Image 1 (cartoon, helix red, strand yellow):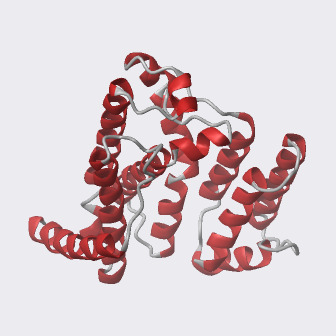
Image 2 (tube, rainbow, N blue to C red):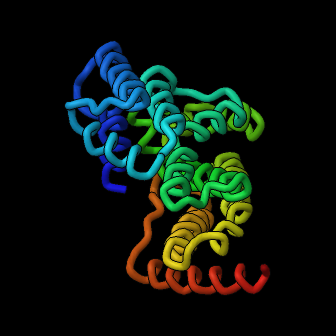
Length: 254
């Protein structure tokens, strides 16, 4: 898990952090793809984080395709700042979020097709929650993850985001987007009972945390400009409680 985290974290930082030019970022990410290819040929690249990653891949028979997907998503972060449709955004999430769940399932030998589908729903749902939570932060990076088709449908111009104005149209849009994320998290809930006990409990807590952020966004009427939703100590108590309830309820349903 540590090797996977260090790989994903360092690649993400190449796309987002520091003062490198877009060309330099893309060149560095291409080197990540090349290192993954070397691991696939049985090699052990010398530059961190790849020695530990190569060892983990071999020890646990981890697939390389999800790692390549992550790198492709990070490359997209360098070149794409707007998403025309939800399908476009969903494809990005398929490569930026879903691979994480797929790699964890592979690590635990729990990557049956049904489990992968549930995992994808949860990971995409969590990614969407993060997008809606961070609309203002992303705008300062010149990124908008709310699909342009949705902005048009609800009559919300980009000027609304620029001004941080939570008017009625924006509130309706955020209620729609939060509902979309919530539906995905709920759709993946059966995965909780399909996993070993500890991992299932951890996943139940992750889902509960995502749903709690959704509730926080709803509670402020979608005004994520003035009130970035976060979880405090009381929220984590609620998350733990709902995680236990989820684990028990899903197991009884089976």
